[in-house]
Amino acid sequence: MGGIHTQRVRLSDSFMKIVPATSQAIATAKRLGAVVWNRAAINDVIKAVVGSHALKMPKLAMPLRVMVTGSTQTPSIDATLELIGKETVLARMSAELKRFPA
Image (cartoon, rainbow, N blue to C red):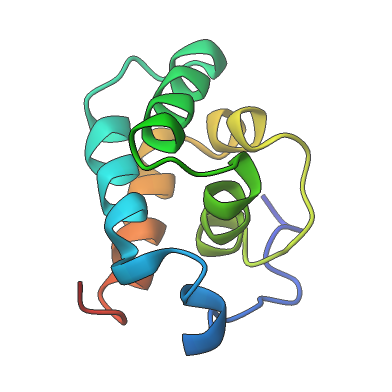
């Protein structure tokens, strides 16, 4: 995965306000940890979290994208997460979420 982290973006406090108290990101991480790792299942989890928190997709996808890839621009978030791999995605999310207490 050579080029993914060439210029890593850090989540700032103001950027994390997009995800109030990080509860949506935490819910996403917990649900992702329990799914079979494929694009359709990942998409279902993301849509469920978006729906349960009354969000629009970018409000969850953008912080999630930055947490996992370090970039604000990637292909679709479900495809990106699938390609990076479950263990790596969950480890990166966990590391970023530790910086922002819920």
